Image 1 (cartoon, rainbow, N blue to C red):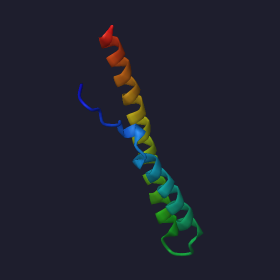
Image 2 (cartoon, rainbow, N blue to C red):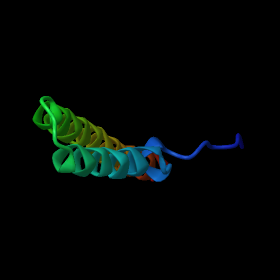
Image 3 (cartoon, rainbow, N blue to C red):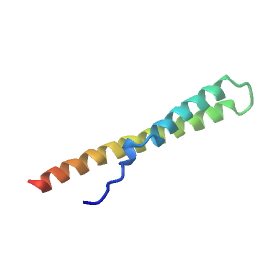
Image 4 (tube, rainbow, N blue to C red):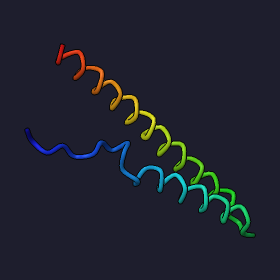
Length: 73
């Protein structure tokens, strides 16, 4: 049996990216400047994309496990 690599939803990269996006957004909101709102909006969009990718990876992982369990029967 071949060695299985962990699924992307089980690796810490996407949750870490979401945390970093929130921190960058909060720092950007606290800064005074011409483009601080733009930086916060960018960080919020970054968070939404990372959250969507994480959710999609989670759904696909569950679907893959379901398909594998059906194949074994």
